[in-house]
Image 1 (spheres, rainbow, N blue to C red):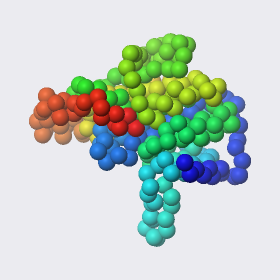
Image 2: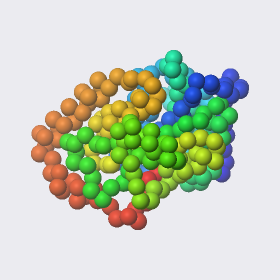
Image 3: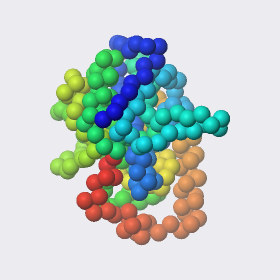
Amino acid sequence: MWKHFSIENGREQVYTHNPLLVISLSTSNPQYILLYSQARELGAYLLRKMKFEKIASFYSSSLAPAIQISEKGILDLSGVNFFHHFNGKRDVVLLAGHSSPMGDEYEFSDQVLSFAQKIGVRDMVSIGARWSEEPVPPLEMPKVIGFSSDEDGVEELKALGVEIQKEESAYFFANTVVGLAQKYAMRGFKLSVNHGEPRPHPKSIISILGVLSKMMREEVDVADLESSAQELEKAIRTAEYDTAAAQTLGSMPQQQGGIYR
């Protein structure tokens, strides 16, 4: 795996206020991007609503082989970025960007967690969408489902109102990075929702933020998301959306594991 880290100001800053790493990357697979872009949308929303400073960029051959070309015709290699925010109570480190890795998930996770360990992170939470045979009805507020790397973490999620994910497999980066967290002296958490709500997933983001804001120890303004949810609900009702048909179309056989990316 080819890789390159670019550190802002040339050195890592060690954070001391119980730093939390929030990994908010979604698949770039065109087949699944509409259903499973919740993490990318949440990362973009946090960057709009909170004051973050970019602290590092990470480029890897695990990511989609693409470049971004500006209006001036100048290219930028697609990568992911680490941002830092301190709210007076807790340091929050956000990993956001174009996509999650398309391969080499363990190697990519190693790079992410090694950097996080260097800057003092001891808790990390990965955001994503959980595959379900029966999608959530599009007008329903999704429940937050999750798991943790140890029993204390599970109890913490329960106290936050998270439904615990049990006795099932979870694949690819958004989940394996949580599984590796303990190897880097971190407690890992996963927060997810079942798919079903049409993009841009405002209700899903509201639900996740209801839990994540408590973990970050900072309330996040969701007025824009609530307005978007109302507009989307109105559009669905106007179009007489066929929920039963949508559930049938949204169901996928278990071998379609790539949607976990």
